[in-house]
Length: 252
Image 1 (cartoon, rainbow, N blue to C red):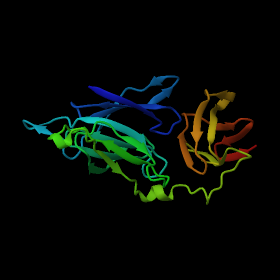
Image 2: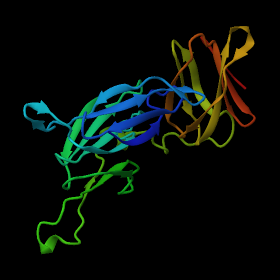
Image 3: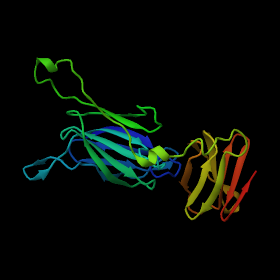
C-alpha cells in the first residue's frame, strides 16, 4: 500500500527522483531515479523498518510508516531521509550520501501514533528541525482536545558549521560558480550566490544534451553526475557562463 510520494534529487545528477512510501505491509520505500524528460528508472526498494518493527506469529510485519521527509539534516549537502513509524511511535533517520544510498542514522521516541512530520528551522539557528504530531486517541476525559507534538531540534555538528556566509560572502556579479571541474563521472563546483543555473552537457562532435536547471545556494559545494561520454559542460546564469572542459577550466 503506497502512502505518499516525495520528490528530490537523491543521487545529485540534476534530475528529479521519486521516493514512494509503502506503508503497513512491507516496511519499505520505493526509489525511482529520474532519467530526465519525465521518465524514471524501475523502482528500487529501500528497507525503512525501525528497530522495533512488529513481529506477529514469528513474521516481521509492517511498522506503519506514515510520514516521510527528504531534507539535509547534517549539513553535508546531501538529502537525508526522516520517517515516522506509527505502530512503534518512532522517528527514524537515514543519512544520504548523495549517490542514492541511505544508511540508518538514529531512532527516537515520539508522541503516540505519529502519522506525519514537518521539517523547518524552528529555533532560528539555520538548521532544519523536525516536528512530529501524535495521533494517540484520548484515554480519559482529561485527554479530550489535547494534541501532542514531538519537537526534535537539530544538534548535528555538520549543520552548525555548514557553509558560513561570513566566511564566504555571496558574489553579486561575475560567474555564477567557482572552482568548476569535470573529473571522472562528476562535475564539481562551488556556488558563488543563490540562484538558478542552467547546465548543458557537451559531447564530441559538437553535440549537446538538453539543458537542466539547478537551484544553487551561495557558498555551497555541489557534485553532479555527468552523462557518459560528456567532454564538457556549460553552467549558465543569464548572460554569464562558465565553460568546463575535462582536465581544464575556462571562465568567461
